[in-house]
Image 1 (cartoon, helix red, strand yellow):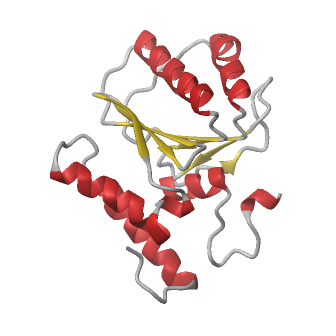
Image 2 (cartoon, one colour):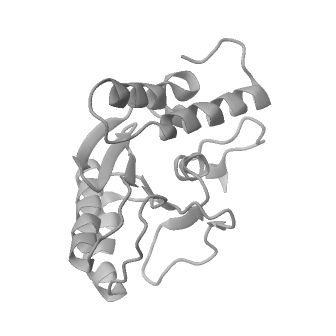
Length: 194
């Protein structure tokens, strides 16, 4: 639970530390450790991750987890993937799009920091099969967490046909803040007010 009386930069530091603690716990361990991880994620910032209501685990597989934060943010995380073929990758992308459509997700955050392989696929396939599902879902923001310290944040241009904002971020906290519109305590206005 958030300590009483935290404001401004002290609260922001506390949120960052809580997210770091939650991310450091293994995502695939069953029993007590997994429960502690989920509890830590739920407790950050006043009872939830960056202002979202507690996470609901939608799907868990050997190579990923998919959670719903609040009622409209889908969080997808790869879990230490060292081998992945194109068909497996495309199947996972289909599953993400299906969950977005099913849950009417407004924001999507894909954490690729633990996927250690680069998979090339046909972008025409993505535009033809996946993009329409995101658009039917009503996706407004789509964030990638890359771990790259030079990640640009919101992209100036999105691929042809994309009607929602996209961005790449160095860490999960910044991606969630951007995707959900939760401003930092020291920001003067919400990032959704642009």
